[in-house]
Length: 91
Image 1 (cartoon, rainbow, N blue to C red):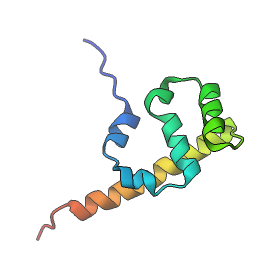
Image 2 (cartoon, rainbow, N blue to C red):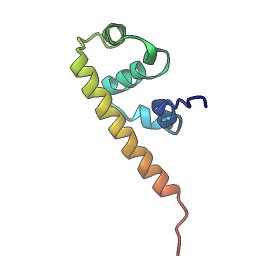
Image 3 (cartoon, rainbow, N blue to C red):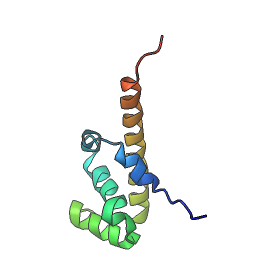
Image 4 (spheres, rainbow, N blue to C red):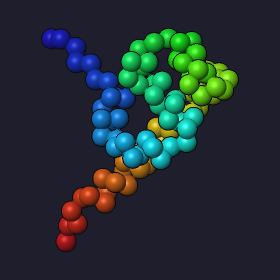
């Protein structure tokens, strides 16, 4: 039996609308960008360098990890609220 690999980040971000990402703070948007897409497969040192170039700020692995966690938490809350509002009301 072959293994089934699921990229949870891609599954989660596939449901996120651009307006949700736009609502994040600039450093959170940059961190999410580094954590996903083509940068998601790169070593952390490369991500930190990319973040430094993009934001013109200093980034540590700790700052990156905390910022990504905070951003994904915010996106999850926005997504949950959006999906709850779209669900048909049951009587």
